[in-house]
Length: 336
Ligand code: NAI
Image (cartoon, rainbow, N blue to C red; front, side, top):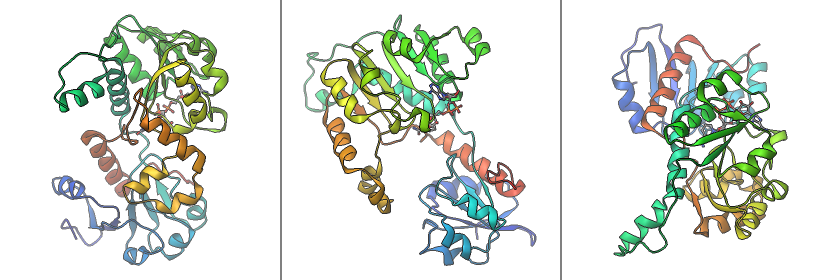
């Protein structure tokens, strides 16, 4: 037990617990009795949840039907926006509420997006590597200014709009595409909506901020890359928005000059490298995994490990919302 609580407090099993979470929660006021478990919640560890009123889990947990069958809890609090690691349908049938954290940091992902844009425009990674090797020569390190360049933003939801605000600070000219345009935002932030086709044709830098759904899968493939001529491409949304094979081809043909990717079409091999989610191996396509490795090895591609969300403040906001969800049963995603 972590905090002294009254007899009526809800008992919570907090899985995937990290030290910083325990420290952060030490200074927080809440009326919950929380026990922390480093383990993820899954079929092997579900016994740990015996006798608890609620469980709090990260995406590394696998709250499948078998787990739900054994749970005493009637609330699963996901410490994430996504909840595809929980069988929400089965939970609903069993009267178990599942809640999520719908918003925690559009600025966080937007800042990472600009991190990638600047790393590419000013060749920051190559520059640092050169100096690490004791080489202070400027050879190969000439970049380009962002001021005056055309930024194409695909998807003007919360993250896209934050990116546009930041682009304005750099003096960039912004165009955007979205099937549900926000004309008020366009007026306020001074950007123009165009078709995807015009955006791909006109942009110096393209950045993706739309969800991966059936209609957006391989939004960028050969046909779209054919519209580009030396574009810089940034993707902090989802890997499946880009046809990886077509991207490699577009880089070869200089249709895409360079790319900054926080997400890849298949991320399971990366997960394996850091030691979890290996059970996803069967679901991953080996051809795409190989293509991802080709991208990783390229000098003109910078890749970060799906890390755009990972700031102190964003994670604290996730924790705060989770406490609120647990105490007040908010953000239930599988409502009756
Ligand atoms: P949002 O729902 O606020 O905005 C998404 C926008 O994309 C909406 O305005 C929607 O109308 C638009 N859209 C849908 N289909 C489109 C299309 N075909 N072309 C252009 N626009 C289209 O979502 P938010 O919060 O801005 O997040 C965007 C994406 O960022 C998420 O779907 C998620 O995949 C990704 N993300 C990545 C993270 C990371 O760590 N790398 C963290 C959080 C989100």
